[in-house]
Amino acid sequence: MTDTGLADWMQAMQQRTETALDARLPSLDHSARDLSAAMRYAVLGGGKRVRPLLVFAAGELAKAPWPALDAAACAVELVHAYSLVHDDLPCMDDDVLRRGKPTCHVAHGEATALLAGDALQTLAFDALSASLDDVPAGRQLQMLQCLARASGAAGMCGGQAIDLASVGQPLEQTELEYMHCLKTGALIRAAVLLGAHAGQADRAMLDALDAYAKRIGLAFQVIDDVLDCEGDAATLGKTAGKDAANDKPTYVSLMGLGEAKAYARALHADALAALAPFGDRARRLGELADYIVVRSF
Image 1 (spheres, rainbow, N blue to C red):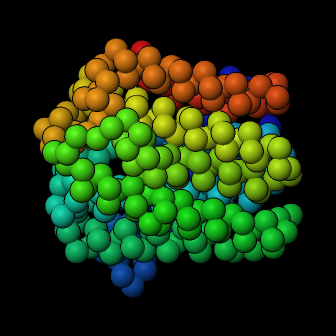
Image 2: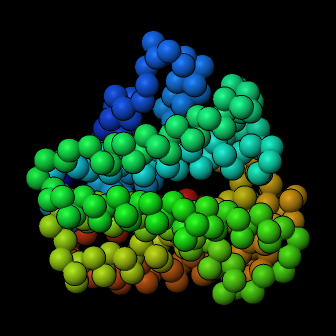
């Protein structure tokens, strides 16, 4: 992996992810053309690809082979994309804007969007279960378990269920953090660990990267809450102010704007401290932590 600046590296990894996703998604010649079109609409041509970037950055540290990282990056992004399609549905968050364009159910109809999300989820595990050169079967099984647990009731889906049940309810900070460690943090944590498992990470490295990922995953959500309060739809690519309008508990509503920003900075510092044993070898992970936290201030 060449020594380039963060912006160039991000652009290269984002394009690599886009190419790998395009190759794995069903073509428009597929017999279920409407479904294929909705899947491609939901995945391609948008998003910052933060989770694939974390896969590649952790994989760089763990000296993972490119084919395994491509599969892991696609898998985690496909799960993320499916979650966005479902979150936007009228029965969930009922949103009409995502990544600067109409949400999948607005563009393709509610039933097709629902099926597209289902199909994206299964495609994620198809990508990760394919033959991966230079990755022993035991480690590949760990990767599959990691993504499955991060995606289900003990992770993202469980966090979303708590979020839906918490509308209009006051939450303590520990309760809010538990919800977001599942809803947002679990998949970010999985992205980091997938990159590590694809390479030569030992127990000490996995523990340090897990500590980093937990903190940066929580910081990501704190910043999302800040941006929902301060940003606009043109900047965010999604509806701004939706959490406040729906009376959802957030870090801003709990702490206030200034304290929420301070908390994000503290989480950022803790994440960088977890990377300290690796020095410059963890440069990309450190730079991504900076990128996540300074999105708004």
